[in-house]
Length: 76
Length: 421
Image (cartoon, rainbow over all chains, first blue to last red; front, side, top):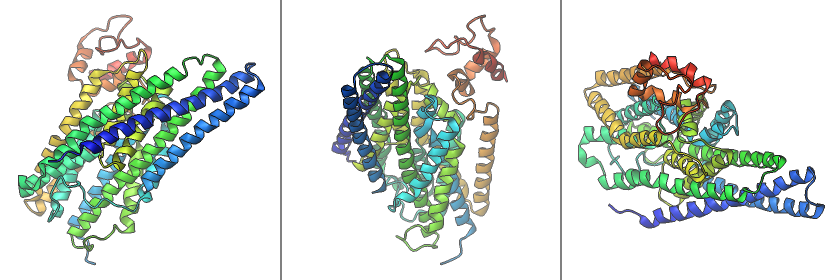
């Protein structure tokens, strides 16, 4: 009986890091995007709105890339 | 190409039935959190999951070459043994569905196979070490990994958005969580279709090879791929609502951020594990992720009584499916009448479980009800108590659950009389 501890450890590490990173980035994205609706209700100025929008889209792009990689892993 | 014998036809049909139960047993993995947080309507959720399962079945060309991945010595495995194994797996899947507990369909299949193989060829046909590395260790590791990841992710996401208080902003983030959760759930469905539909294709192909219809080492014919994909999609669409309720509402109360964290953790663990060479069960990863998300929110609770029942079901999966598989193999060994008897017992058993489930149906209309109703079917003591005790005025449901004070709302009251049957 040979237990592949290395594989188990890497599953542990990769899952933790990827999950936390993905959830963190996505949350940053939606929080940034939500500032825009607050802006519409009379909040921040135009410049910070553009910044928030760009940041949000960058976050979502990272998440989309991660999902695409996930689909690639399923197909491959 | 020879004729497909009656036995072979029975095995193919049984394998498709297993595929079907696998689909409806595992809908919960992808969609339970999505349904309970309200990200998708129940029917929409299962429909989406079914379509993705179907697509998943066609996605990969690398079909499972073995059923058990080395747990059972599959050389010279007779067709009857595969049939007996499937009987064990199907009955265990249906039984756990009846009591609404998520358990691994693959482990049920392994169990049935082990039981049938031992009955057929003795203990030497089992690889004890592989059982530990492929079943026992993953069963402990999966919920820990997924749970820890989901817990940390939940803490993080609540920390990042803790300053969001503006109502418009809250509405916007809620929409975001919904979208993220749906995407993660979609990934889980897709991965499930790919992995589990292919397991069935592997079984049917192996049976066809054993029966001499296909040459050894050949790929599954198109009709096998199509029928396996359709069977798992139909099962998914039917939806194992009992299990969805346990996973989505029974283990903990999920808010959209938690649902998103749990589902993302589950998707990541499933994909990472199957591609780093240490396969973890989808069901156990998802259940662990849901519990982890429950622990990650401040004030969140995990109902350990439900969780304990689930853990017990996981522990029983292998031996219980194994016993049924062994019994079925004992019958099929007796010759054609034994195979007929096994088939009749399978149909009769499935029908009995279905009839039992109708006594307290759970479907898309009441899937999100509170857990008191979900608790009752298996709690003999609880049922007896409910039948005997006079409900105290005002807080009728409080005595049913030891872990949380259930809200004394009207639905609890109306469901109560049903338990006294």
